[in-house]
Length: 172
Image 1 (cartoon, rainbow, N blue to C red):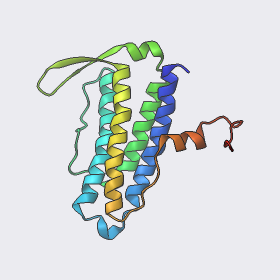
Image 2 (image 1 turned 180 degrees about the vertical axis):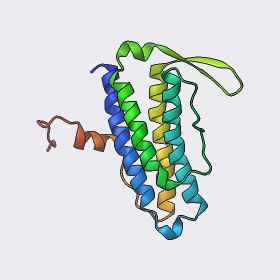
Image 3 (image 1 turned 90 degrees about the vertical axis):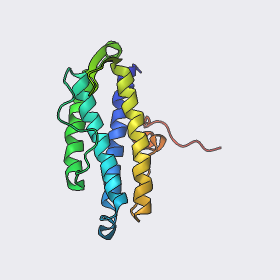
Image 4 (image 1 turned 30 degrees about the horizontal axis):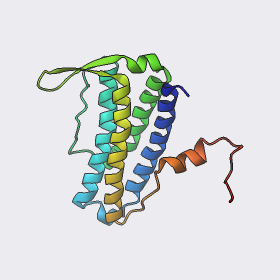
């Protein structure tokens, strides 16, 4: 499988995880949503979507847009529509991605004006790991807030979504 195709598959896994993460947050009882831990969990989810938005803008020649890395005022009710819009943009970007384009570099500037060049593949891979990291934090906070934690393991997702229909369970 070409690496670009693998990244497209991994992004479909991430989309599934995004939906499950939002469902986990939604499962937090209303009485616990005023706690600082809920605000922190929502802020982490906002950060995940903001990073995807901002880095895609950089990777397509933009300046990072008006998206803040962290939005202290983020409302949970706005997250699902942001994730849907971000995922649509990333699907389009990845649909046009090939292995050669993955090797190409993009330019971005830090707030202090320092310029960087980074291969597309490095950032695409970074974002996958970044989301995994923060989803784990969110799951822990949801559990502490008496919400329902949902399995987001890759192997389970692959088994139910990607394995060839001819494969079955192995019995010893």
